[in-house]
Image 1 (cartoon, helix red, strand yellow):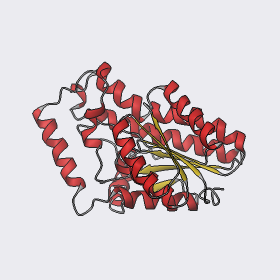
Image 2 (tube, one colour):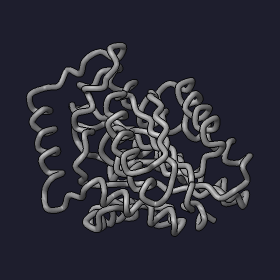
Image 3 (cartoon, rainbow, N blue to C red):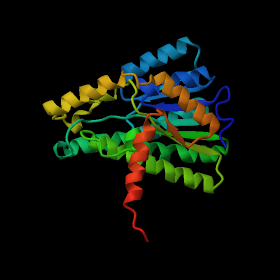
Image 4 (cartoon, rainbow, N blue to C red):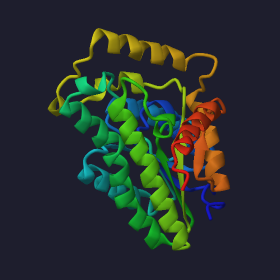
Amino acid sequence: MSESVLQPGHVAVVTGAGSGIGAALAAAFGAAGGRVVLADVEAGALERVGAALAADGVDVLIVPTDVSDLAAVERLAQATVERFGRVDVLCNNAGVSTFNLLADQTMADWRWVLGVNLWGVVHGVQTFVPIMREQGTPAHIVNTSSIAGLWSGIAFIGPYAVSKVGVVSLSETLNAELRAAESPIGVSVLCPSSVATNVMEAERNRPASFGTEQRTVVAESVRLMIRDGFAGPDGKTPAEVAAITLDAIRDDRFWIITHASARATLEARFASILADLPDE
């Protein structure tokens, strides 16, 4: 379905492209001969990433975008089509997180995290799928979830985990619908584990309309522990995750699980579900 998507000159749109996995994906698409559209709320970071890619000869379009705003995503799509005339790959990758016990998360925390992580993906799908359908050519959508989207019950990141479970479900549904329609649009859901990114510092981009996170001392210590763990022996670099993702697009694979170490955790979770099934 998606074998020919990453041909020279393909157009890839990447949200959350100002840093981390998003910036690495943009670089990987550029290295594969693609033209790249960079979207993020951090305009300065976008400019730096775009300048680096342009210096390598990549054709780049920079579109500052808040994916929680449907109108902003629609402007992103319009700018992409006006510049390049098509969209071959969409990576709904922008993500944020808060850190607190579930009962201590505020409604503003929930609205911010779900707005970016889940509604951002909804907005991307609703806006770009019709464009891809009209093209009628092979295309691919990658929705960034997390291992937390498959392994729930992780303390201190409740809204984040809920949003990532939602991204998995949305992606499975979209994939099933497109395959049933024999569409040339492929779908993948990216579920990374430990990766050294700036998601632990997401508060820096929190709009004033969502207030300020009231993080407890314990929650802050957990955040720092998780952040430091990402740089541990099991951690991967954003570039490694990007390479894994492009291979999955070429192979038209739905699941993109970046860490083999997730196997034991996933097996334990599904074993607990099966154990509680009724006998009849």
